[in-house]
Image (cartoon, rainbow, N blue to C red; front, side, top):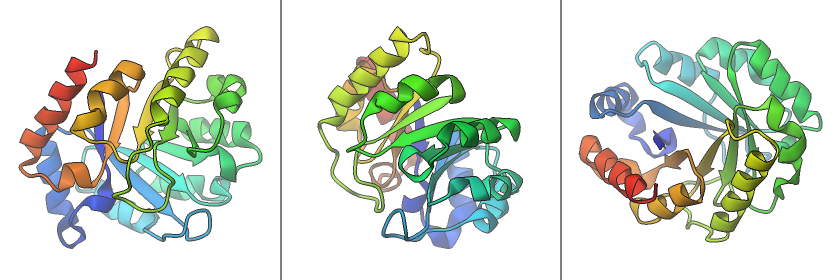
Length: 220
């Protein structure tokens, strides 16, 4: 299991120091939520901040685009330093083409589904993606309560990917993730877990990471 702390819950007055602390703690991924105030009600940050952080960090930058018309901005996020770009199925009429464009930029490509979006689209797009992101809260704000129906959706997604020969597609879960539900999420098929306030609100980070990893191990 990979834990990807969500930057939104970090101390924005000392981001470079926060990233250094994450690396020293053994964290390897960073989840960056990009919100446009249209697809979701909140507004966060864009390529300039990612570019500034890229020069200070070796973490894998997992960039989650919660924005309308994501295809328009792929190059900007690639140039800023993204390692993976995840688009939402709900915001792109031509998701297959956009996923192909992400890969053509030599990046990993991911597809995200809102809680109310069925997994059926995955059957036809699995070959075009490296990761499937299942939102376990309604996107837009950090600190929300985990939606328990995510467990069934996660198991269904894992089975679907296995049945169509796409078991190499990584499954990520984002929203309300904490040590208390980590074991069940891993047991249901999650490979990457995104955690915001439940991670950043519990220093030291090395100890908190260990807590998550021990919980994940019990679910394997």
